[in-house]
Image 1 (cartoon, helix red, strand yellow):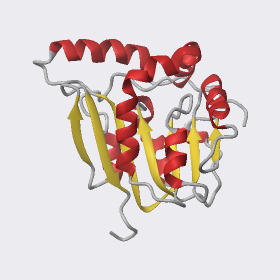
Image 2 (cartoon, rainbow, N blue to C red):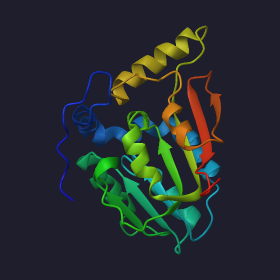
Image 3 (spheres, helix red, strand yellow):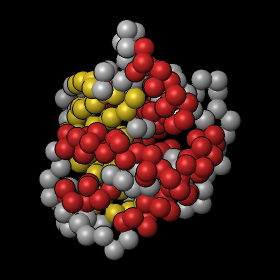
Image 4 (cartoon, rainbow, N blue to C red):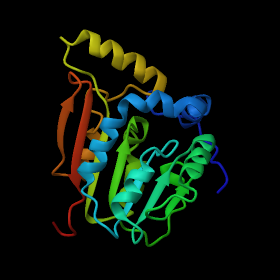
Length: 223
């Protein structure tokens, strides 16, 4: 699929063009940067509660660090779908998954509004791993939810403002946010838009309150 040309973003909204430029610069050393966060990634994947044969979406999959873990969980009868707007990151994700065991992995190089998913795709789970900008786009979230079956599990993990007394933690959040996202909107509750789609959303924090995990389920039809 051809790269999408982003339109100018309104003030305060995520800026897709700037995000792609940011991650293009980081692609070559992205894996090393995220190594300290691997325990968080594994916890997020575990919270999905995946079963063999299921399908799962990895939204903002980056270089594909979560993809082998997801493929292992759903096994050869399942399927993993990765979404990544940055072409350099998506290319590295494809290389990571080439010839790997576990479930088949399909990488879609697009933003969520232009993802070339199969029309009948109804995944069993979705992961938003450090995908703050995507979570601040209600229309993009609506597009993702359209491809989740009723009852699907959704897990998000990422940065949040810590309590005001944790000034050192918030200084780290600020520096990390400037390096990894294009908007600080709703950083006090990054899951706010997600909660509109997941009435049972539960959130807990770790790392002195500067990292959150959110888990919820798409309501059953008529529920």
